[in-house]
Image 1 (cartoon, rainbow, N blue to C red):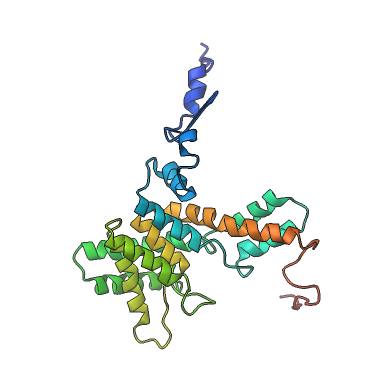
Image 2: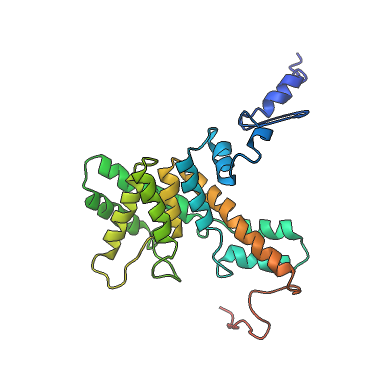
Length: 270
């Protein structure tokens, strides 16, 4: 007996690609149900990011806070592997789009993923506090549990900055948003409590870094942790593009990770 499947219908194919993100038909483009002609010139880039990811329009306060976070993590110079590799790739004849993709592809768990991880850290503190623990106790307990698993605490400390220059202005934006009633401040307070735990008994504090600051913002705004990495990719892509474009105009070919006058240290076989 034949059990051949029926040929797919047009509806079957349409349903295969069903989406609520956009509607594209001849002479019609809608993004989350909004005609694109109504959005052009009336919504910011941060606003369209919110609309596309959340399916709703951000309030002015939400939009300002999201934009501040996106601006804050645009670039950190060729010290950042994603920037360095994009610049090298731009000298290899692969084109600007591939140079940018090369940089973006380096944004993984270690470089680019700390914001997502920090959101989970902050959520642990917040959960213990909501269950009745004092904020200081919740932070101390959480930090201890995380440090028992790894010497790295995502979102805190920086290999270049004793105080990340992006910390105060970005957390200041969050504090203003709390004052304005845009967010409730629970993740901000969790981050500040962790900073106090890390500063106790130290001569050199371990302040929150940009990954931690943006984690506070994205958590306060209600984004799920995986989107923290996606939003970081959107932000850092701007810096990657700028560096790759600059490198294309400098005339180098096959740029390596260090000047030709410096040779790698040779080690005898293990």
